[in-house]
Image 1 (cartoon, each protein chain N blue to C red):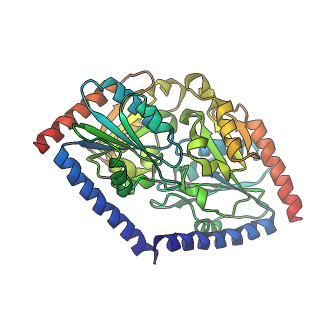
Image 2: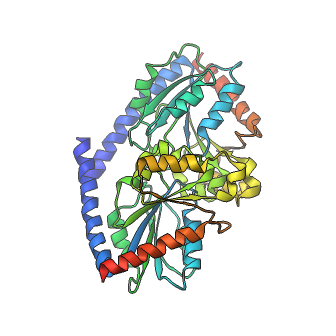
Image 3: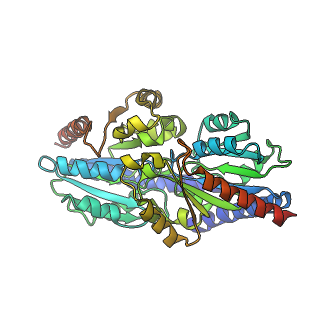
Length: 221
Length: 221
């Protein structure tokens, strides 16, 4: 009984995700699904990105959390549009939740929609939410064994942000080892060692965003 | 259709968990369910605990991971019995998986069975695995907002280990704030700020374990 049910839930989600993807494609909006463990720094990376690129790109955020609207408030403080989804215990966002959240956003002229998923390195990997790319953050405080131990998440991500590199002197984390493991799971993954706190390494991440926005625009036109 | 199915899965799990709890109760084995985000330091805390207390307590470990037997090998290197469960994508351990794993352990004379759950601050909270107490780790690198954002996990835990306090000078983490939030969710939660890396604060955690072992023994006798 269990397997067909799970299959139906995934299939229903994929149908809505495909619908969203078509919708975003027509509008030329780049959509990124940000995932990580709790506390890897998704919201802090977003705060920096929204602030540093606000003069050149129009961006909005869908925030997913079990409880609280703390993250939407942090993100909105940068001046960006933000809408909070509370999953009330659910361990990942669904495409239907994102579809519902879009009603609260003005999408006109938008370049990037960031979807910050629930902090979880497992469940969100299985549910598309209409994104062009999945982006996974890994804090160096979490340990360099995480790609090997949570392989699906890294296998399906277009980019891995290795955040909190300002902590490298104080933790046992081998950037090369983490990158090597991620590349055995996904040879094409883009790696960005950075610190959202100090700003180090953010430039390469911003260049990746700019390139993806350009590609999306030229697809749409 | 979905809700009754989820209900049945939870109920079936609870039945096996109750059976395990009776079994452990008869044997006088203290069982602890260790949970946290990926990379909060569950395995490192276990390595230290198993090493430091090996002359006074007999301990064994059930390790839960999506993939790899890295953690069971790390734990076994301390001389403790360890058995690895791979959930193959599953975001939490189930009572049935633990029951199956017990076949690989010699339980005679055991004082403590540690069950290290899958790294995940959401799903494992909903599935008992026969434990006396749930113990949640929070690394200070994850941020002091986590009890507020992932309330169920802290609400149901008897103890919270605030790990990696050696990183406090380098991160924005308010120990008092995190403890306060945890106590609003669960007034009786025991708080242990510690560093598995430097050993600071481990003594209070060990005293808690000793006290719980004594209580379990006197219940069983």
